[in-house]
Length: 299
Ligand code: 5GP
Image (tube, rainbow, N blue to C red):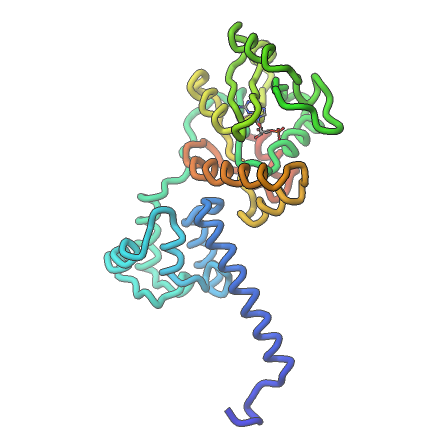
């Protein structure tokens, strides 16, 4: 390139900053796909809507290998089957390729399939630090008609937490007694440390009075509730991105490094089970996420 044709220094610096930001955004998106924070169908939709977006500029090869359980060999077979060139970017696929890729994704990664559930009993679960507690607190404050279950736990109160308001803080022997006496609708050891459980009595009473009930519990508990109350609605709260989930966990600063690593491992496993839930709600705005939960309760 002649001196005259070369872009000025500042433009080149800006262009390279832009390229770095775009690469970073694509790397974040791949993490979201791998951790199942985002559905692959949603990524394809974003790519189609905007070919210059991180999704649109993602190579189809990278998209496929970011999917769970797809290695290079499988990726190449899929591309061959769908007649897509490996050099293509997601935003550059033709109409037939988009349609065939969508059909393949739908068969392989089916989304939530809401059944006709009873609106009255809703379980709000999701990975650690996604903000279940904040959404639940918002509902408690703004929707007094909703009965928010108060769990029993063997963990110690954090600063500011009150017994009987945030949790019933009990010791191991009291928790054993509650299990033995059948007082808990479900219970689980969460993050491999403390036990948490949902007292059955207040829920039965609220349901008999026709009040909607919300349980904010972990995934093991959610599946136990489904087993004993098949008509309960299971809602999965998703973070806007995996990186945001990690930021929230680090920012909270209530856990040490080892505990944080343990919670992130749990979060990955929990995200992998999101397909079992009736509804997915993305928590990028607490008020809107809370409203979506309440709408489901009143459905
Ligand atoms: P934290 O210790 O941060 O308050 O809560 C840790 C985890 O325990 C959260 O994921 C929360 O949803 C879960 N949890 C709270 N109460 C219950 C409960 O009654 N049953 C179950 N299974 N999990 C609970």
